[in-house]
Length: 407
Image 1 (cartoon, helix red, strand yellow):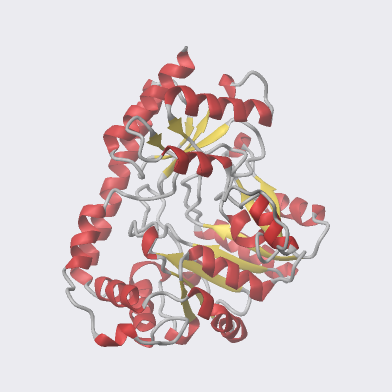
Image 2 (image 1 turned 30 degrees about the vertical axis):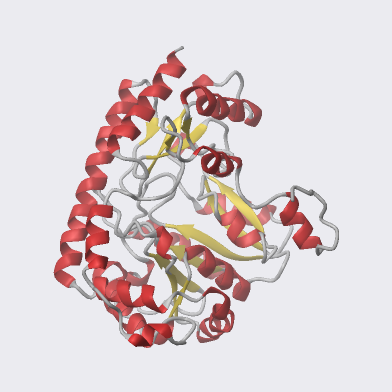
């Protein structure tokens, strides 16, 4: 025990043993979890509705015996039909066939298997930044792809433009197979308009590039801009546009590990089916979630309360940030705000950002997500998740950071 030798491991095994694909803020989080004074504003979890979800799942009682047996590895037929109906009603805007849906153990597994089908080792994938930090682990660890950041800047509100896409494409030294486009955005909390989505689709189509639309926060919209799914903008997705969603964020159920891809590309779904054995969702989990989303009256109440609580919590945290003298990017969806702490760095460098993040962690015992982990194009923008902790603790964390920064 405790031996650091990697003798006998493969090249990939030795690499992971030496450096697991977890960002430093995640390592620090699990090292500090459980400490009474620690405030985790870094973990992408929505714990605001646990009091609604747990009783609804518990109300189902004993599952049928069939959940103990094997079923289709990409999801039981009944569950995929329930999902098709639910998503058509709630955010996709139209109904897909159950056979066009593949269910796997979480969105990370979905992305890994999806990109296994779309790209070969060494190929490139465009990701607009700042982005979800986990995409790098999802795509690069086992698939050995190269993520090419599409840097958006604060000077125009972090807009994704075709000029920025073109620059990233031209700068890639490897073939670019796809664009991974997140809407609503993590970490910016922005909702793309129909015109913005259409511009992205047109750009990718003209270049023969797949678009993977991560719509994992589709229901978590509380601002003025309504959510528009890519599926609602065209009569067909075609073979190069795919939608990813999961229960982890909108339903605050990241531990149940259930995500999915919707695609009209039959060959892609067959490929994912061939990989699904290693990432199948428990039959019991499928049964529970299927029963939950089939309850229209409950889902109506849940979605309304989801928007209400997210909006209320965001407004209170936004006010607390203003009181603490911390500028932030206005949000209208999701569970994050991006804080602008550039003025509190000794210099505009990544080393200075790391020192600032570590100082906040060590002195205030508050963990934010560094901008470097989100591959932000400029140091000093740190992500704050306001839904992972109870509101009182989140507000206390903001106040602590404010006191520390004021000196």
